[in-house]
Image (cartoon, rainbow, N blue to C red; front, side, top):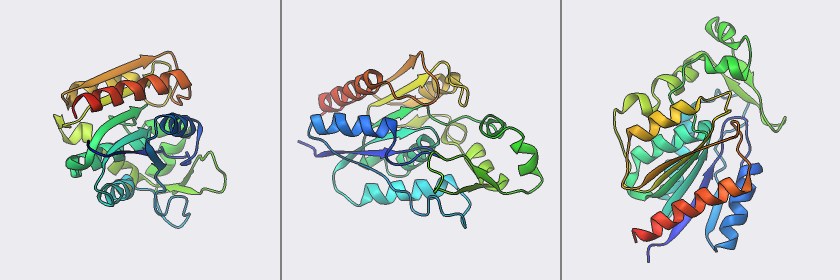
Amino acid sequence: MTRLRLLFCHGLGATPRNGISVKIQQWAEQHHIQTYGLNYRDYGNAERIWNVNDWRRDIVTALKADDAKTVIVGSSAGCQAVLRAAVDAPEAIGGLLLFSPGVGLGIDYMERVIPGSVEKLQHGEILSHPSADPTIKIKVDLDNLMEFVNNCVSKTHHRIRLDCPVRIVHGMKDKLVPFQNSIKLLSQIDSPNKALYLINDGHFITDRTTIEQALESLWDAIEADM
């Protein structure tokens, strides 16, 4: 049987060990699945400006570091890096689970993160992005954020071919990323087994039942293909 491992990729401003990752870790331990959270290189380095392709690089490196098929769970902005990496190295992916994927956005989404930020960015300012851990310093500027916005896989690919099961979970009360973006993303994904779960929640999904049901559904689909 193909060996599987689970990789968690958090979002911008989050940490590898947070509310959702802890529940994923606990579920994986109960099912005897090797799992770990990716520590992005240079994440929180105040001397570097955040660029989603740095995360993409780190994910591809992690995928190539092991012969096992990898099931990736992404959250928020981490999902865009996950999708870019999945396009780069599709043969290494066993399945994808995306929570509140940060795709299909315009630069105006930064207004929802930091009110008044877009004008400052357009005037060349480098801003500090909010972080759950105050010791993590995240710097953003307009050029790098426009890379995140303009070269999102959902914009550069009319169809996104993923030869693995895919699950997406999005809260209909999400004030950062509209759930309609996930509906469009699902329609673009060419996968033999895909599903979108719209739930009564916001951007940060921590409900254990929701997380575990999505994992169970994805894992059942993966094992059915083996």
